[in-house]
Length: 352
Image (cartoon, rainbow, N blue to C red; front, side):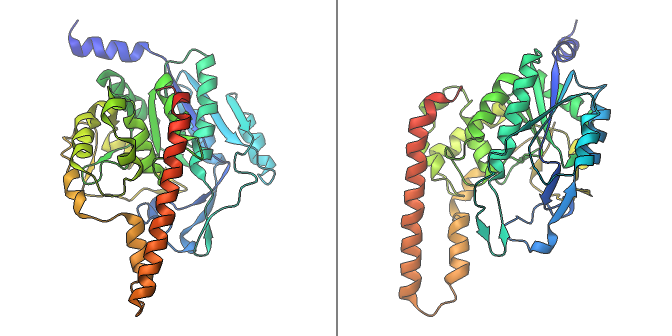
């Protein structure tokens, strides 16, 4: 048996489960507005999307592809009872957890409120993975309730990931900013994905306020000898600025940690009723050579600093600008120190 045949045989031998996680009604951007950034778009671009049909279609397609399917959502007294009844008839595991954000106020950006959906996303993923574990599943992929995609392509790409021996299956990588990992779909061995979801579900232990960067840095903890190589201060203070040691660390471990799925799978993605149209020139997919330009990012300022300067640079008072910038910097420093202390206290609890 050739090496390729042996790898293919092994990929088909392992059990693969699917977690469909998310709300029954999803609010936010659509596939047509991916890349705009939800804190910078106007409210009229947001939609309220009924995920029922998506979930049903995904389950019907996945039944003949995956070994076990779990739908993981949270209780919402305002959700449509008819939709819930339809999903209950699918004959798959439906887990409704308590909403971890039920009593939490949402932060505001302009006239739009945003809940901490990172906690929701990965707590519901974690619940689904626990069900798969009870059924003896070895590998798992999680997708979102508000999206549909070609599940046969997903399974084929994921089998390629299993053969690669990488740690995590992701939609794509970006050569210009490799520290951003999209969360449309994520996969890995059940043990690794469970550990990563556990770290990402914490509302306190964050390397970065942006979920895509937080996914990246926490996944990088799975790199061999990362505890000795990775400086936690550099991770927590990361914006778009990196020192040379961090750049070398990322470039050394990027390929062994992340396996990008195919371009065809990404192009099949429908999010909240619209096809994903985001096509950045620096996206890297399965089979493509990733050439990172991480060192070039050292010339850029952090995103938060850019927002501050755009908001106050128009003032004629240089002194006022200096005060605002100083107090913002102090506040940001205190926040990051708090995160670092939380990291030190909680790190022993994370199964990495």
